[in-house]
Amino acid sequence: MQVQLRQLKGSWTLGYALHKHTLSSVYVGDDQYGHPQFDTTRSEPGDALFKLKYRGDWGQAPLIAEQIRVSLLPLFPAIGLIVPVPASTMRQRQPVEEIATELGKAANIPVFKTIVVKAAAPEGAAQLKNLNTREEKDAALAGRFSIHPAITNQGKWNALVVDDLFDTGASMDAVCKILKTYAKISNVYAAAVTWK
Image (tube, rainbow, N blue to C red; front, side, top):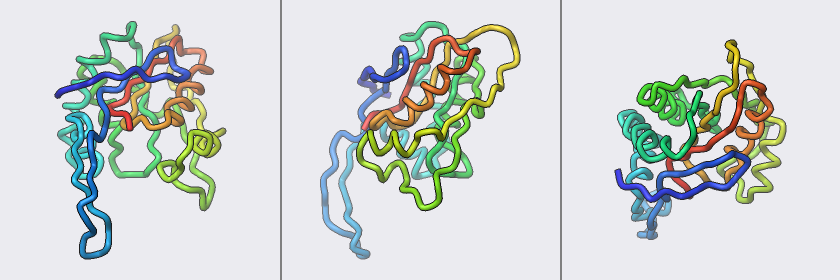
């Protein structure tokens, strides 16, 4: 998988994404229902993520996880646990959780899927992906994350927060900030498959 790493800035100690999601997208007309159609070229990580999220190709999760393990894990100090960003859209299987699980298996690092809890959006609230600015997204996420203290042994660990598509960074930022309040966490690092 070809990558073009980009450093991500935020409340984490250090963060990276593998590649830009969409390299080009050209409007080619409307379909028979009047929906706009595009000829889209994605990066290899972007294409793998698209197939995973929108085509149900779960075989992409281990491939993406392996690329994160090879390209991003060596850039961080020893990671003690992996935390997937809680999903914005409810699905039977969550792509970010699948990637985190596969990464945990490949790197022999425990994955804590429920350590960060996301409260449901208020009734009638817009979906996060439909908000345009960082300020709107920050406001929509304010107070929605909390810690479920799932670590029972002694010590502090570096956490790697994993997300699929990094846009404004609002979700990643909110998760990292709440993790920093947990006494069992030392430093927080960030990894995303692609950036917008």
